[in-house]
Amino acid sequence: MRRTLLLLALAGVLPAPLAAQGDRVAALIARFADPANTARQAAADSLAALAADAIPALVPLLGDPVHERRYWAAEALGRMGAGAAPAVPALVDALFTSDRFARSRVAAALGRVGAAAVPPLAAALPDTARQFWAALALARLGPHLEPAVPALVRALGEGPMLARAEAAVALGELGRPVPEALPALTALVSSGDPWCQTRAAIVLGGWGAAATSAAPALERARTSDHPDVRARAEEALRRIGS
Image (cartoon, rainbow, N blue to C red; front, side, top):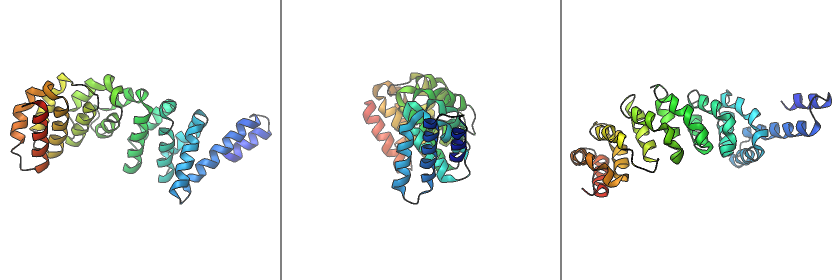
C-alpha cells in the first residue's frame, strides 16, 4: 500500500499530503506485528485519531489471514466510536466470520460505534447460526437498543440457549422494563439451563416491581440444585419485592 501511494503521488495522481497520510497509515498498520503490546495499542490509538483517513485501510484487515491484524484493525475502528460508522457493514460481517478471539474484539468495536450498528445486528438475530454473536454485540449498545427490542424479544424463545441468554442480557442493558419480554424471560427462568436461568433472573430483578408476574417461577428457581441459580433467584425476588 505504501509503495502504491508513493508511486501515485510521484505520478501526480495523488496530492503529496494525501500520499504522506497513506504512508503514515501503512506504517502504523505495520506496527500491529510489533511484539510489544504497548506498541500495538499506540498504533491503534494513532489510527483511531486519523478516523476517516484510516478506515479504507483498516476495513480489509478485518478479513486478513493474520489474527493480529484482524484483532487490532477491529480495536482501532472501535476506538473511533461513532466515527467508524462507515465500517459497520464490514464489522458485522467480521463478527460472523472471524475467529472467536477476534469476534469478541469486533463485538466490542460495534458497541463503541453506537446506533449505526443496531439495524444490521437486529436483522441477524433470526439466523440461529448468528444469533449469539449478534446478541452479544447488541448487549454492548445499551440505550441505542430500542429499534432491536422486537427482534430481541423473539430471540428469547428461539435458537441456541446460549444465544437466548445473550438476548436477555441485551434487554437488561436497555435501561427500562420490557413488558412484552416477561413471558419469555419467565420461561427462561424455568428452562433448566443454569446460564439462561441466571441471566433471566438478573434482568427480571433489575426491573423490580415491573417483573412481579415472574415471581412464581423465581420462587421455584430458589430450590434449584445449582447454587448460582438459587442465588440469582433469591436476589431477583428481593429486588422485585416478593
